[in-house]
Image 1 (cartoon, helix red, strand yellow):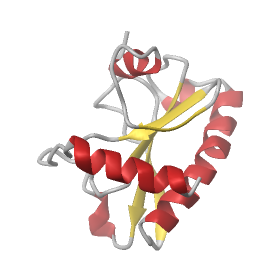
Image 2: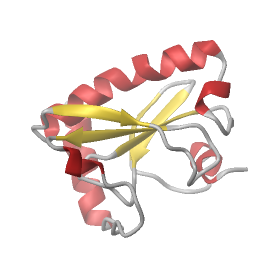
Image 3: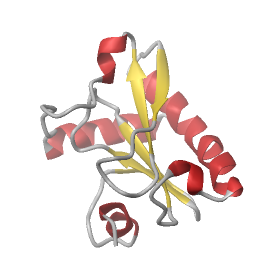
Image 4: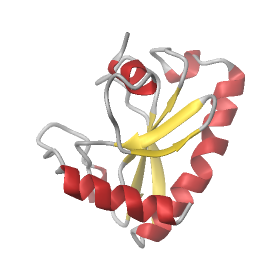
Length: 129
């Protein structure tokens, strides 16, 4: 069972942003920038493009209002989608509020956000959903 599957079933807590029967969105605890959110399918599949077509279509539809809320909450020029997928073998997308290309630092060296920082970000996004 992957780390994300454990989050889905509640074995590991998360800062949940939104949830449906098929997807879960929660804050990255090592954010590149405040508002960095992960969107995952509730089916455990390693590679994004191995997901069934309904999940591929659905993940963007699910993510759209979340991205708009993140963009407004952080006054970002845009919210970009990044798919890397090596750190956890469970398909997922990163939603990043960005104003410049430098907001995309997903590499080691990112610092873990405090519980207080994550709670503040979570409330700010949810308020705009």
